[in-house]
Structure formats: structure tokens, C-alpha cells
Image 1: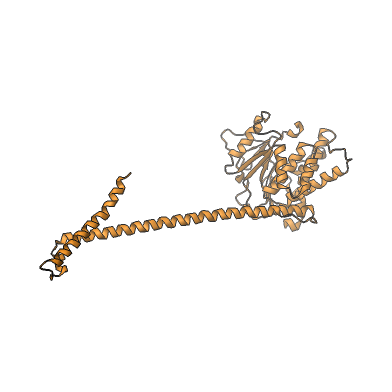
Image 2: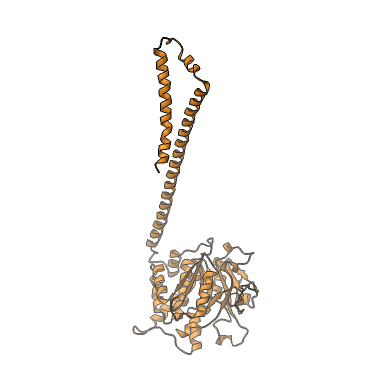
Length: 402
């Protein structure tokens, strides 16, 4: 390690020796009998190659010193600008955190309505992109041995087919914690959630709450993705035009459809993609809260909310309370509110009857039934023959086993 240092020190020593020799020659000449002779003549008497060599040596050393100086200066500048850039980035992060803290501390007015407070906490910006989130919920944790293998495979495929997306699975406890965190400024949200008597009601409510606050995709645990999420949007539709993507769930031609569903045609809510703060999500959250708290208010203090009747009656009650029946009503209400949807004609279920291809209405992309409830077999080679088959839904009615 010491060799390079010694080698570098030889150069100033050589220069010093050369200078001393020249000085001695000058001194000798000036004190000799021929002192009158011009010093320049003495130097000229020296061999030309010696003078040129000395000159080159001195020039080279000067150039090297300048290069080393500029190299050190450039290195110092780079270090300074790098430290400044790091400092600016740190300040920007601190500023973002501070703004988030300020926003969380801001409280909506006590005189504001439920919908106004929801809007205050999570305003809607249609220009943002769909967030890269995938949300799922299930009564058991991912590592629980009771987690059905079929659902486990679907859960892993959502993550595998969508690299770069944040994928989270919530159980009833973690969903409860998340709601407390996201909606601490609106206590009625947690009040309604805790009052619900069935897991399926809370699962329904949770999907709207997480999408309203964070956006992204919600998918029931009994779903299997056939294609990546970005494939859902047709090439002739810009994501900037969209605020939500849903599909048809049921479209009955039976005269007895009322015994099977709340509405003849219903929009599915087992898979939803939405931007945060969307007005449809705000409205369904508000309606669920109002219905739940009204139901509880009608009971005695010692009573708790519960679902009664046959399995079919319970299913229809769930659909009206938090499920596809209410979801359909809220979407149609949005379409027919021209201030929100900018649609100046009446929209009914007939607009989507026997839908075969995607249909854009306002900022909502409506997909046909087979898009989110495809009945195709899962291909081993991963090739999907139907370009509109995006998700397989097992429709396992898993809430009945809770």
C-alpha cells in the first residue's frame, strides 16, 4: 500500500534537484571571472535537449497538478450536489408526511351530513389512475389449515398474474382494524359495521369501504383470475374515462325471478374495480349505514340485529341490505342523476339486458356476465380463447358456512 505514495513523492524531489542545479550554475557563473557574461548565454550554452527536457518536465508536472486539482474540485462538487439532492428528497418526504398528518387532523363539520363527511374524508378525483391494489377478505387467515385449497390457488393467482400490484387478504379481525383506522373521523361507519349480525354483511360492507378509501380491485375469495387486470379495459377506452368497472351478475328471463333475486337484472359486486372516493361507493356506504342504524334503533336495548327466515329469505335480505340488490339500485340511481353521470336520458335494466360486449355508460364500464363469472375451464397452458373472460367465479355461497 506504501509503494504508490513513495512513487508519487519522487516527482517533487526531482524538480527540487533540478532547480538547485540551475541555481548553483547561476551562482557559479555570477561569482566567476566571467561574471559579466549574460546569464542567458550561459543557459544557451547548455545542451538544448537538457533545457527542453527540463521545460517539458516542469510543464507536465504543472498539467498534472491542474488535472488533479480539477478532478478533486469535480469530485467535491458531485458530493455537494448529491448531498443537496438527498436533503431535498428527505424534506419532500417530511412534507408529504406532514400534509397527511394535517389532513388526518382535519375534522369534517359537526353540522355536515353523512354523505358530506364521507366526501370530505375521501373526495373523488376522476383524473387519477386506478390504484394498483387487490383486496380480498376471508374468515380465515392465509396460513390457516381451514383455507380451502381451491380458494388458496385463486388467491395466489391474483398476485401472480398482476405483478406490481399490492395484494392484501383480510379476515374479519384485520378488516375491523382497518375500518377503525380509515374511518375514525366518521364513527357511524364502525357503529354500523359492529352492529351487523352476519359475516357476509360485514364482508359486503368492507368491500365498499376499502374501495372508497383506497381504490383498486376487490375480489371475493371464491374467484380465480383468468387474465391480468389491465386486460379488462378495451383498447378503444381510455382508463382516464373510467371511474369503475363492474359486470352483470344475473339477467333473468324467468317469470319467477323474484324468488331468486331482488332485481331481474343485477350488477355483480363479487369483483369490482374502482377509483377511490367514487360517488357510487359513497352512496352505498351511506345507505348501508342508515339502514343498519335504523334497524338497530327499532330494537329494544337488549336485542341484537339478526337475519331470520329460510335460507332463501335470508339470501334476499342480505341482497337488499348490503348485497347485489342494493348495489344495483345505487348504480342505476347514479346513472339517472344527470348532475353526477352527465346522462340526460332514463337508464333502466333493459339497457344491459343480454349484454354481449362491454358497454360504457357515463364513467362506468359494464361487462357481460361471462367476463367476471366465466364458466370456462381453467386452461393448463394459460391461453384464454374468450378474450372477454377475465375471472372465474365459483359462486360457492361460502357465507352460508360461516
